[in-house]
Each structure stands twice: as structure tokens, then as C-alpha cells.
Amino acid sequence: MPPVAVEDTAPIPADPADALLVRAGRAEPGQRLDLLLDAAGALVDRKDIARAKAVLEDAAALPASPEQDARRAILLSDVLATAGDPAGALAALPEPGETPEKVLPRALEAGLLEARARALFGLGRSLEAARQRVALQPWLPDDKDRIANARHILDSLGLVSLGELDKTAASAGSDDWRGWLELSLIARDMRRSPLAQKQRLHEWEQTYAANPAFGDGMHGLIEGLAGAIAEPARVALLLPLTGRAGASGQAVLQGYLAEHYRELGAGEPVPPLAIVDTGGTAEGFAAAYRRTTGDGADVVIGPLLKEELAAFGSGLPASVPTLALNFLDAPSAAIPGVHQFGVDPSDEVAQLASDSRNAGMSRAVVLADAAPRSRRLVEDFGSRWRNAGGELIDTLYLGDLNEYRLSLERTLHLDQSHQRSVALGQLLGLELQTEPRRRADVDMVVLLAEPAGARSVRALLPFLYSGDVPVRGISMSYAGGAGREGDFDLETLKFVDMPWFSNAEQNLRETTSLQHGAVERLIALGVDARRLQSRINLLDKPGSWRLGGAAGELSTGTDGRVHRRAVWYVIEGGQAKAELSRQSIEKPTSRDGVQVWTPGDGTPPQTSGAPPKTEP
Image (cartoon, rainbow, N blue to C red):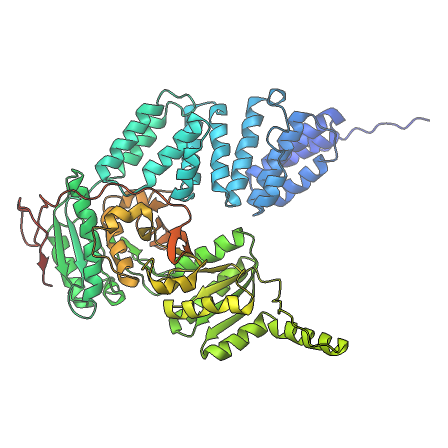
């Protein structure tokens, strides 16, 4: 007797995803896969990632058309990306061109491009992610989607170094790709005056307005960028110009005025400026802050010292946008209304760790001097390196140079190599002349030492048969005097430092009284303080943009800190050379017409000359 089919009469669940799963179980094989994919999509929409992944695994066993394969790949990529696995999300997708475009509907082709862009962005491959979104742009159905995608393009390009963007734009093979690269360069480069930057944004719009790849809604995006660039009405620069920190304050002032005069020479209408000596005390800063904001300053730059920064609180709220030139010690200590911007090396340590891991390095030896600052940086690097999956083979602190050499020999297993040579000679009854061989599993040496110690340690490596090991570090090991005799001992050192020392800032740097080391880095800090006063709103733009300055490529964290991404340099022939160098821009041409505002004046006088210094 043939089996009797029993119809499933159980009620359909009210939950949409569960209802689709029940229907899939009752459907014919030809319809089942579509229903499973619909259910997985509903589960993804409500972030039920585990169940969505299980449904997609069941769906993988069913025969599928190219359209169904594409749907499943997009959903699985979305699930894996949401679960924090961008590598898996990328691997779930077919390679570009693997599925002929004419086979897939427009929406699925767009979905594959967007999923690939999302996965690449998650992997930190921002330039490739932007390229995928540029390819996606003409596939999108309306201006709303194209504008949303345009913001994603700029956010992705905002994480690419300006040097890399310059290089990529120079070889771009299509007008639309070159156009996006140029727009990112214009929007992020702070070296030109605010008026010149806005003019270039509008020139870009005129050049590319007729290109359908950008869409009709770009005007609003360009206007939004241009509107975020605006000089304040009055500025107060509050620095310690006398006392123990006077030299540091004077260095910041020199950088600020160098950029101030450059903008003036470019025809920029500069705002009235008050320069106030805080005396280097919290009380002096608080008094100057109250007085200048009470007299109409709508942007304050300062303080420079940590103890001055600590003056903010219930007794001294930040009543106007304030750019502090230092950080509070607590990493998460945000001050409402205050951007904390300084030259703390923690960002350089973070970049050293992340870029080295991204370059495929995993096993490192750290060589440092014994200074307290170096020990803190070693601890910071070690934590970041291990969190990124790297291994620290050993950490050595410089003391007696002979003891240091012996310790390094043991770390590199040169002592074991020598012992093996002696044992072999004894076995053969011969006196062997051999060259010791270091251990082969060291990917790099990390150098965290002040210039004198760095030269001693770096010069030691070739004598220990380790001259071929990549050596990386941060700005602390370089004194800033390219071409000095001592820098030959740092030959081949690769390190991160400010763009201030590169060709990109050469013309402006030559207008300052050139210093070396920490003092000159404070000059660069002053330059960027001047540039940021008109771009605070651009710095606060939602997304991941980095604005290109003299101290680095700058972005704001949720803690109110302005983070710096530095430039990679390498010592060649005793001189530091940027790996990705940018062209400089024009020098200042005039110092006439500066508007001077002294706190307490009702109206800024129309006079010329350098701004005055006023006492606290």
C-alpha cells in the first residue's frame, strides 16, 4: 500500500522569520532556497546573527542559481562582518568578475560591491574599500543612496594617508576615481588658507558636476564641507611666554605666527588676535580665559601645560570652543568643549605597532634606554603589540654598553651559535673559523630610546651579525637635525615623525628659526593650532577623516583627544627622508595688515604689525 501524504496543518508563526522558515520546510525544492534566504535576511535585519548563520549553512546544501548564490554570499558576508570577522566576510564573496554582470540583476550587483567594500573597510584596506564604492556609485537607484555612498567613499579615503592619495591620484586611470581622490585631498589638506580651500572645493564641483558618476546631490555635500571651514570672529592665544615654560610657549607662538602670516600673505582676512601670557600657572590661565572670553573671543587656543589644563572644571567651564595644547593624564578624561591636542608619543607608538603588524611582522625585540619615559613607552608598545597578535621575544634596557652587548648576543642566540661552532671543532679536532649566525625568527627590532642611546644601540647591531634586521622606532630617537654627523649611526632606521620635517612643509618651515627635536615639534604644534582654529567643525565631522597638518594627520576621538597619524621616514646617508613625500606649497609673502586685538578693547583697532603680548 503506498504511503499516505500527511499535510502539515500547524499554524504559521507570527514572527516573520519563523514564518518564512516554516514555509520553507513545506515548500517544493525549487522555492525552498528563496524562502530560506528571505528568512536569513529577516534575521540579519534584527541582528539575530547566530540563527541567520545557521539558516545560511542549511541553504548552502541546496542547488542554486547565480542570483541565489549572490544573495547567499551577500547575506553571509553581512553576518560575518557583523560578527567581527571581516576576513571571513570578504572570503564569502565571489571575486570581482567571477559572476558576469549580465547574469545578475542590478540590485544584486550593487549588493556585492557594497558587501565587498564593507569587508575591505573592516580589514583596514580603506583605499580598496573606496574603490569598490566608487564602482558601486552608478549602480545606485537614486540621489539619496548615491549621497550616502559618497559619504562612505570620503570616509574611506579619509583614512588613507595624503601621501598615498597623492601617489594614487597621479596614476588614476579613470576620471571618476581621480575625482574622488582629488576631493579627499582638497577637503583634508589644511596647508592652504580657508578661502583657498573653499575655492578649490567649488572648482572641483565645477569640474565634475557634469559627470554622472557623482550624482546630482553632490552640491549639498560640497556646500557642507565648505560651510564647515570658517574663521572665528576673535581668537585668544593663551600661552606661558615667561617663566620655566617660556621657551616652549615661545616655540608654539612662533609656529602659530608663521602660519598666521602665511595666510595673511595669501590674501586671507585674518581675525583679530590676542596673545596673553598665562605665566605657566593654573591661576594665570584661568584669569586669562575668563578675561578673553568675556571680551568676545569665540575661539581659545591654550593652555599649553597640564597643570593649566587642570583648571577646567565647575569653576571654569569651557564657554567657547577651546583647543588645548596638551592632554590630561587620564586617557578617558574628556572636557566638554575642549579638544586636547599635543605631541604625546602614544599615537606614534600605536602607529608603530599597527603598521608593523599590517606589514606582516609578528616577532619583535625591543631595545630601549633606561629613562622612565622610555620604560612607559615600552610598556605601551608591548601591550598594543600583544593585543594585535604580535610576540615580544625580549626587551633590553641600555645600561653598561658591554653588558648590553652580551645580553643582546644571548637574545639573538649568538652565544649558542658560537658554542655549536666550538663543539663541532672539538669533534673534528680542528680549529674552525666560523661566523656566528643569529636566530632567524626575529622580524624586527623596535628602538625606543633618546637620540644618544639610539645611536649607540643601532650602531651595535651590524657588529652582532644583525645589520639586516629591520629596525623601527618613533620620533624620540631622531633629534630633528637631518644631515648631522651622528645620524649616520642611525642608518636604515625607519621611524614615524611629523610631516613638518618633510618636503610637504619645507617652505613654511624655512620661515621659522630652525630648531631641533622637541622645540621644533612645538613649532609644528603652533602651526596646526592656527590651521585648526578655522576647521574645528571639519575636525568634528562625523566619520573617520584625518586632516593633514604639520604635526600629523589629525582626527578626533570620542574622548575629545586629537589623535595624530605620523609620516614614515627612513635614515639614508645620515638624513631622514619621508617614504611618501608631498610637494610643498608657497611661502608667506607678506606680514602687513595684521589686526590687533587687546583684551578689554571693545573694537579691534585697524593697525598693522605683529600682535602684542599682554601680561596675565
